[in-house]
Image (cartoon, rainbow, N blue to C red; front, top):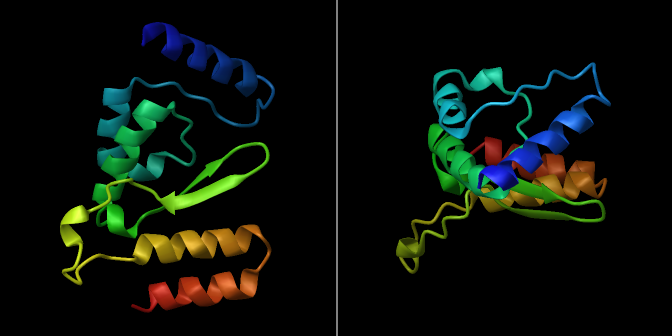
Length: 131
């Protein structure tokens, strides 16, 4: 993991030098999690490798109500995938009418906004906010 983490960090540092107006800070994952719980407003954007990203997104989801309320998006150079932010499927809810669809509705609103259907994105987001 140290080799992969080192490469990721070096790449991030190199790219950050192209954008001196944006603050760049590196942090080990355990301190990141502690800081996220203690002072979540400290972070505007987090760039994290996949494994640590899964840990951090589940921790962050727990801070705001759980996996059922957090939308997520994964961006590449030519497409975006929208999905619940924390990928716990909550299979225990099957057939019990207790699953929370909020994350999926918010993902749909993000997707609509991304394809410039702002009116419909706002309708959906406002409906979720009004629940």
